[in-house]
Image 1 (tube, rainbow, N blue to C red):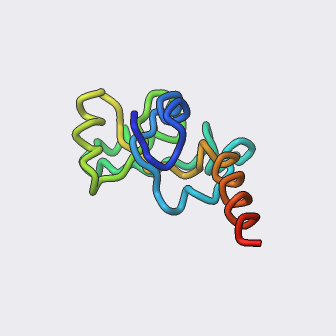
Image 2: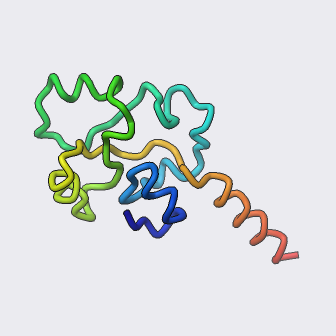
Length: 108
């Protein structure tokens, strides 16, 4: 996976092809709803059978691909045999927070 907004090793480990703007400020480590392994999963594959959509919250997060539809991640998801879901947390939250802190410190 190659997502320009998070470190490559994290993108590969968490199967992230792209990150949604709503996921950037969410630390997923201890978030039981939106975090990795959380109960909320939002599929971007609207043609996915209803029974498979209902099963997504219980699905192993490692069996999903996280991305966005406008960037053609749907084709990638189909080629990998994984449902495409919108990422609801930032796997590189610490990296983002550090970069923001460094940026603000550089303004002073």
